[in-house]
Amino acid sequence: MTHPDQTTSPVIIKGLNSGSMRAEAGSRRLRVAVLMGGSSSERDVSLSTGRTIIASLDPQKYDVVSIDTHDMLRLPAAMQPHLLSEERMLGEVDSGAYEMQQNQMASPVESGAPSHNAASDSVVPEGINPVASLSISDNSALLRPDVVLIALHGKGGEDGTVQGMLELMGLPFTGSGVLASALAMDKAMSKRLFQAAGIPTIRGIEIERSELENSASERYETQQEAAFIDLRAQLTERVGRELGGYPVFVKPNAEGSTVGCTLVEDRENLIPALRNALEHDSKALIETYVRGMEITVGVLEDADGKPQSLPVIEIVPRSAFYDYQSKYATGGSEHIIPARLPQALLEEAQRLALQCHVLLGCRGMSRTDLLVSLPAQDTNGRIDEKADSPVTSGYTLHVMEVNTIPGMTPTSLLPQAAAHAGIDFPAMLDMLIASALGRTQSHKALGHL
Image (cartoon, rainbow, N blue to C red):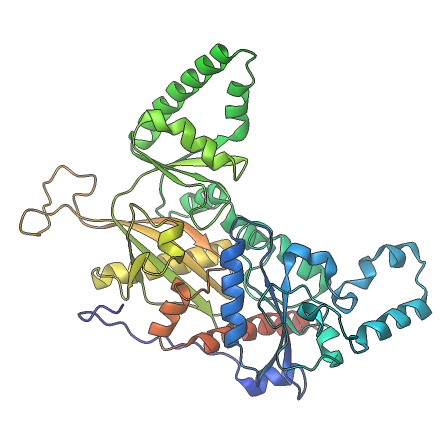
């Protein structure tokens, strides 16, 4: 939804056109491998992202192969790093056998073979045609991709692990590299970096799984209950001293899509909330619960690596906070572009998003989520500077986290912000691919200096 009373200047980001991208691969179409699915708690979201991307990639520009990383070991041999194979490391490669294997892979699939991977022997999610533009016998599906488009979310995709594998394979890929991905996924670590850089963020307490396990290790049930009561008392004391008391927000340290998150109103529900969060990660965060407006700011880079912020989106969830259902269910939340905030605050939110993007070393794209403490108002809706409120002098911004691979589903925020800036979804994908290829060309140029 676009708010009719406010406007934002268009965002113009330079990228490679189809001709220059083809120049990277000669006169043919670019081969794009879309990594999706995986085995994290956000698998379903990733599959939705992947389907949306595949449907939006221009078949005149790209040959597309989709790969579900849940079964990564089934990648075709032509896409695997042969230098890292056991036989190659042991010096036992039989060149004749290797050529025979490649010829078998390139030969047409016999009748009755599984249709879901007939074109490329890649692992394809159910219901997705991996290479709709290629015939079954087309050998190009088995060739090394020109670029990998990462459509993974959560652990095993957004945390730097897949990025490290692709770097070892020497494959260009969209989005951030290993370090930025790992830092953004680790909320406690990114919070420390934000604080060190003077970026306003939400106060938090880190809790290790071992702290709860130690209480549960008592031999007798009565001892366990006493240990948990003692732990709850200690944590409640810390919550009061460091966070100002309840309510608080409990979440896993390295998860996304609000998986494992709980709004805790009182001390009785703190330990259950921590148990829930620690089912998903070895560390949990207890954060101050900030009442206010949720906003998000996307950042896109052009082919030269120059980042620019997109319009600010206001998120109006149907539930108490922006939970999983609010994010992905149709009608779960309302998105207002631009957010209904003063222009100076919109610009400050965009500046903070750019600062976070650069601080973590993000590439290609990112999306920074923020909370806005709203000023107290009197009964007529006017700002009350003397009200008894944590915010008495106006609005306050709090950075929550940075997403290095934002969702690309039909209800996702980054594509909506880009569209409001005049960048449709296929054009945004072109930009991400151009950015990945541009980085590769820059690295090659530096290597020749």
